[in-house]
Length: 446
Image (cartoon, rainbow, N blue to C red; front, side, top):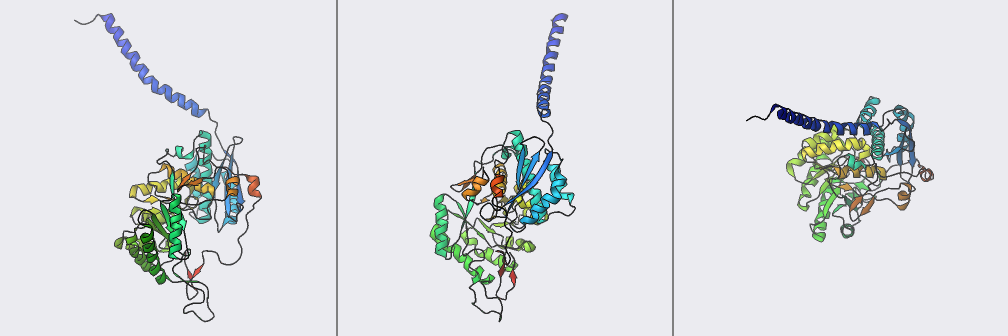
């Protein structure tokens, strides 16, 4: 028997009220979230200043400080370029800062694209440094405003800490082995091994060998000698140290295409973690030849500034590690996009540091490293005590791992008064460390 009409009506009303409450609940949460977001006033860039300093130790560092319309809220970014520091600082002050003032701080992607295309010509070295700096500073501000470290804004931690590889050198194979062992005892699982610096093992001593009359008499690079000696170094290291340590080596782009293929084949038995920069960027097509004959993992990208340099190598699976520097490729925004490309094609990141790098860029890389699935390794770089004082929040190296902090933003600041006491020192005349010559006095490209 059907219930009375009045009872059916009451049941119908209850169902309607229940349905209405269920539909309203998400709307109430959304409205609450919207009101909370709207409670934050719009932020604009009020001032941008370059901060140039030697870091108290002869560094060529340029930082960007982006001040906002909220008093006391600012962001820090790295625009360091060891070979063009003064040019970068001038570009920021004279060309980019006036363009950025008044822009919306929250629109990181939009301002990245706008800055990238603003000068019409793009992907230049100095332009990329400047672009990277503003990008890092905007992420720093966004994190501070949210009360979250940048890695949380990027999706949160994908690992507990960031493993690093150390740098071991030596004048002999035994000395290299001893220095690799020292890092192993400190907790490093990954060590890059060189002998006599870049090109070491392939250098003919000053004045020796057949040379042009009245010509170049300094230490001369010989690629055939290099390709003979370096595999013997890694054979020595494996015999003496075993297989537990993950070994790397940096060729520093000194080889011709054919000799790069030959070296890659010869070191394969010694199971390198990667062979770095075996080719100059002008000859990257030779990676196809290398891939056909050896499984030695390839790392490349230290000198890259343009996506058309790295996209083919990653998408064709011709390299195993991308070696770009975050402050040279476009900042955190660009590094995340490269990391996503790497994940798609089975490549890994190994963001470049180098002795000239600064703590702000190191931390920017650290935040990306923590949050991505395509991470491979991070290059080690440690700083003296004066730098930790000048840039409070500088990351710490412990047991082969890099540790930043959980402070909002990038987690680093700069003592401007202290930085000013150590002004940038213009580079001196003469050749730089990049200059390597052959027996006939010709330049060997880095």
